[in-house]
Image 1 (tube, protein in one colour):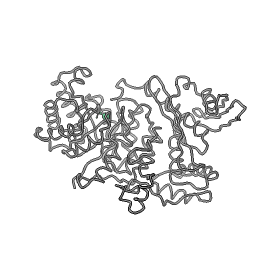
Image 2: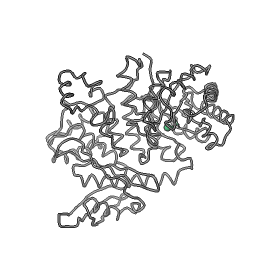
Image 3: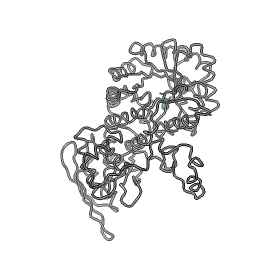
Length: 515
Ligand code: KIV
Ligand code: ZN
């Protein structure tokens, strides 16, 4: 079977989702999971866009050994050199350079004539090839580009040395048969096309990103760019889990293979959701909480008689298992460390000790900890590890007749500080007390507050998501705790940490912005 390469851009296009910005530590945690998932290429960021992004790409490039790591660059020497600076030394670095090719982008955004765009694209690819032969070139807004021009520029950049040619549907405009036909036409009309791998990168504005990607594969594309949970600019990108499971489930008419370890899909989905603070909708294909739940009597009856009546893939194939060993209050450090290893974590002894203390606290309250609980508590530690602001203690006094009163003790850039406040409700009192200690909180407006349970039952851990509006953009924070008020405080502080990072990133941004 022919291979389809999976290029994951959760850390670059995914990070461009409003509110999804990640710090270096968080990007590294996701990159390690993507490596376990065995994606072929990880696009780790856009190094010239900010010092933070540069450092994240550098850290990922050096940490990841089993996948190629890519950095994005516009068609400019400065971008390409900065991308290379971040990537070099990695196991298999790739420079990904792009320029827009649609009439509207060339005219209104670039203010360039088509000939100039070809010249700039060729020069960019040639410059990137001085650093590495692993060069990918993208035609931004290819979905709306004129076909003659697209064929011309693709031929020119392949001649210049690009070994992967990416055809994005940047604005999610095309329909599957139309997008598939574009790929087919490229194969028919570009004479040197077989010297490159043809890739696609579809956005989901019309909900067609996955369908368009599959149509492209059916017509010759052999790399799909996608993101975990379909994260990405606006309505997002093609969801990796959907593309991969569609190819795996429908091998009968799509005889292609990926090297993805599908049993790592759920774990990847949860980690990305926890870190970005974007909850996964329950009915989301493959990774939603209801994706394998059968509610109606007729369905349950069919499932008991033969699971294939209503199940086209097994929950186990994406990493959902039911007969997992649960840990409890009497489990020791050894069993806990074994569990972490079986869940794919690679933690230092100090990190295991920290997580074990947290595990014992929760196990004192909750009789049995399922894998989801262990993952939630470890991911929560990852989120908080490099935060400027950390919660140390929280006290809340409330009652049906009383105005809630909260006191918080926090570490703020290493120093311990305390704050107190009242509020109309318990969560408001806690947030007000935190606001007293973090001046940046005054710049933000609470947009969303949401609580989910990590597992079923009264003793489930709470997962709280908080979204703050800041200067027209958003930041998301997440907190997990046995106690919903503590989880709320952690989520709010996490969002404030992100806001401060975003503010710093905006200040050191070299003016290139996002893509
Ligand atoms: O959507 C797009 O066109 C992109 C390119 C930079 C690949 O993200
Ligand atoms: Zn994109």
